[in-house]
Amino acid sequence: MTINGMRLVRVSAVLCAAGSLAACATVTRGSKDAWVVNTEPSGAKVETSNGHQCPSTPCAIKISRKAEFIATITKPGYKTATVSVTHKTATAGAAGVAGNVLIGGVIGLGVDVATGASQDLTPNPVNLKLEPVDVVVAKSDGK
Image (cartoon, rainbow, N blue to C red; front, side):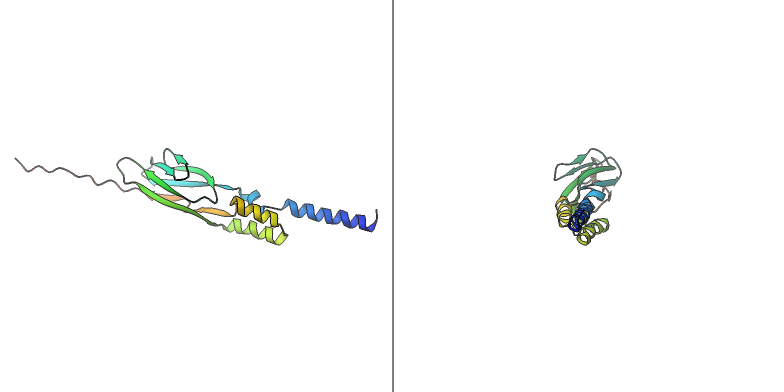
């Protein structure tokens, strides 16, 4: 094999290795997260503005890491509660993005950003104490 042929083999091997590391956060974390809701008392229904729901807390809903939504939590006898959920760059996600930058995986960086793999839903978990509905008691005037 000639010197140019060996150089081509080495360059190809390096490019294949770099390509295998593309989208580090997507590979290690995935593009979905389990969003957890706990209520006191348990047994509340959760519905999100992006169409997800669970019939009874405690529950976990698999949602895109880059989602933003409003969750409505209801239970008979308790006030309706709403929670605004957004996303932020996670420590582990930032490490995956940094890995892409250091290795030169521009394509991997793009994939991580597009899929939201570098993000975490926040708040997560949601721990909520439901407030009872005020009950009005009719008073007798003694007549």
